[in-house]
Structure formats: C-alpha cells, structure tokens
Image 1: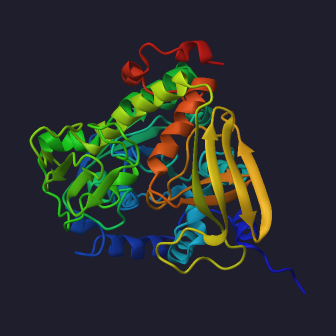
Image 2 (image 1 turned 180 degrees about the vertical axis):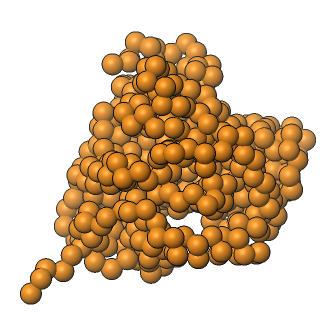
Image 3 (image 1 turned 60 degrees about the vertical axis):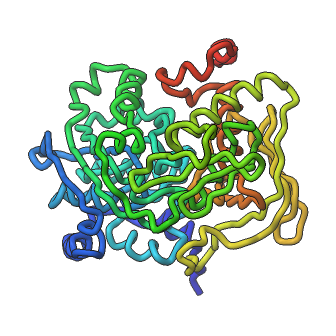
Length: 442
C-alpha cells in the first residue's frame, strides 16, 4: 500500500506548469462578473508599458497592499498567464487549496530561504513562464510599503528577464490587515517596465534593490488625502485598529487604545479620533492629539520603540498566547482560521531574541529565534495573530491581548539594532536620530 502523502509532500511534488487556458479563462470570467470580484472594487487600469510585447518570460512585481491584489494583477496583464507566488500557509486552507492548484500558484514560506518555492520558480522561468511575486514578502500591514526582502536585487539579477512593476493605489483602504471585511471604494492599477535585462546586467544587486524600494514608496492614507475617494466603512473603520495603533499619543501609555465603530480612543485618558469615509481623523474632544493617519501613528510608535529598546539593555516584553500549527493531511475548512490549535504559553521579546515557553500537544515546548534568523513577522490573515517558522514548521501566535503591533515593531527594531540586514528606508532615517544604529551594523 502506498504511503499517504502529507500536504507538505504534495506541494513539494507538484509541477507548477503554466496555468491551464480553460481554468484561466473561467477565473477571468469570475474575476470580471459585476459584484463578484474585480468590478465591485471600481478598478481603473493604466498601461504605460505593455508586457504583451515581450517574447520571453517576465517578472510582474507589485506593491502588495491587500488580499485582493491578485484580481488587479491578473486583469491588467490579461490575457497573459502567469504563476503567482503566495505564502505557503495559504495552501493549507480549503478555500484556497483547490483554486491555487488549478491556476498553479507557487507556495513560498514567507521570509525564509524556502528551497521548494525557489526550485518551483526556477523551473517555471526555464520553461518560459511568467512569474508574479511581491518582493515585500507579504501584504501591507499598516497601509504603506515595507522594505523588500533582503536578496531581492540578487534574485532579479540572476534571471535577467524583464521586470514589470504594477503600482496599486487604494487597495489597502479597500481590504485592510486589521479587518477582513471589504470597504469598497476605488482601486487604481498602473503597469510600467521597471528593468530590462540590460539594466539588470549593468546595475549592482544593491542598486536594483534600492530602486525597487524607491519605486514601491507609497502610503494609501497619504494617497487618499489627494485622491479623495470615499470608502464604505460599515461603521467599523476602527475595528481592530488598536492592534497596530496601540499607544496613546497623549498619555503615552501602551495597549490602552480601543477601536469601536469608527472611533479610536484611549481608555485611560479619553484621547481619541473619529474616522470619516475618506479615512480622515477628527478629534473626539478639544485638546485631543493624534498623528494624521494610522500609518503615521505606527511610524510614531516605531520611533518610540527605537528609543525604548536603546535606553534599556534589559528591555523585555512578554504576553500570554495560544499557538497553532498547520494540518498534515486535510486543509483547514474555516474561512478565517489559519491554523489548528495545538498549545499555549508565553512569548517574550528581548535583546537576545524572541522566546516561547509553554506546551504543545500537552508536552513542554520552548524555542528561541535570534535576530539573525528573524527580522519581521508574518501577518497572513489579520492583526489578531502572527506566525513564523521554527525549524521549518509554521507556528501561529495568538496573543491574549491586542499587542501584535507592539511585538512586530519590537522584533523589527531589535533586528535593526543588533544586525540591520533588513534596513529601514533612507527617508525614515529621522526615526533613528541620536541613536547608534550605524555602529550596530554587521
């Protein structure tokens, strides 16, 4: 009797060929039915450089703003077919596993040197297939872009095939990381050629990476200050927003913000804002203070974290968590769950790394990830949980309190303090003024 294969083993054995024309056509039809997928988001498509004129394979890269991006990427390059690269954990969810197989989406473990994903990409390009991937590694958490994964420049340089950039605007405000319910407004997608093979040959890997980061520079909240698109917020503009906007700008306390309806306020001092259909902030009371947007709020929190961890060599933050794991044989049926519960314990972030102490399957379990291993965390579904890979296996972390935003900033800035391989943007240097970041680079 043949051995029953695990989901892991099936993904490793799968041949990621060019998507079947029939399946691709059906998906195209679905993606363009009114009120189903694409049209309900009121997209506008702008073609500056047309990839359909290329004779060989190309890369499509985009500033990854939301879980809906696949629709806009697909429609703007139609009828070209491509293999999309997606987070490997999504293949363990029933609602994606079948469709991903039909359209030959390639799995890649976020923020890791995943040999299965790299081999699949390499094989596809050698067969002349187009590849679409996000160099940021996952969709935006805060509404603006984050630095691309280290090594992106070398990766693009190695293949030396044309690279097309698809710039998205409005997609994050449509589909947030804090709330899985859509908030329909308008989305714009613009495609242009970013690199020719000759460009990739003449530029250094760092120059390529720098150009990608600069080209990706975008903040959806800032964009809408000019675009003035109205979004249907369903009286939940502040839903879960306290998971990332966790610190009060007035009293300075952590984990005191509350999101209710369209209001975000501090339960300690009352300071807060109401959010309108343009995502503009309006103070709840005279004398209230706040940054101009959620993304600006997170930037402010980051500067506070940078100062705090440098001021205290014994800095430590802990929280109680539940943990989950991926299934071995059958994908998860739930539309919202990313893992199967398997234990609980405590997460601690300090200068030595991220630590877990607890139980898994009723047995003691502990681990430490140093900042040479992790530089950011994966937010696959929403900001109530995060995940990382421990010894190659995904572990989902669900804190008992709403502190994902704080944990994420701590991990990123601890990495930058002690290793700084995943550097912040040059235009964010102001956050580090007066620090010793440059002395810590290795």
